[in-house]
Length: 167
Image (cartoon, rainbow, N blue to C red; front, side):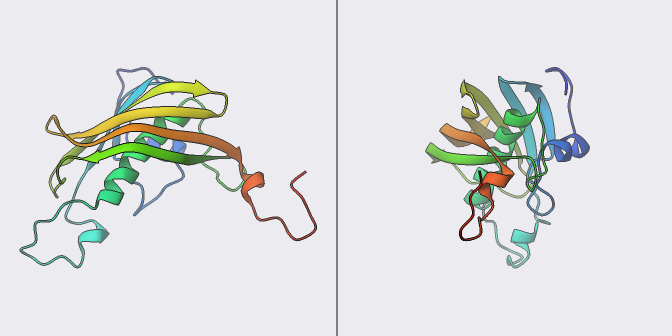
């Protein structure tokens, strides 16, 4: 889609990822070097649905599972940037096979700007190994030693009626 100096907003992100509100958790791509690395951002806001029931005096962190999902979406952008196929019903489906070496360093709070960085460590046919971290003001909030992404045709992932096969 582009070189490492351009930034991309929601329209470009939605062309690559199938996620939509409220689960599209990347706001902008600051840098992408296809097949190598990406830097993307997510603004944490108290207006997000997960804060709806929070007490007015609550000061709690962005849910860790959503922090991880947001970083994984940035990694997914990196993995599919050159060959986007967001139609998960007929195209290729991106699957996270596993994530290891995950460490949460401190909470991300409403008002923080998460900077997700992801780097391809290895590419093997339809599988990628990616590493990275998320920062707030240059300080780590999340590190990921290894995330394995693989791609499968959507048709192979649908349930097969009894007596039939995907062949």
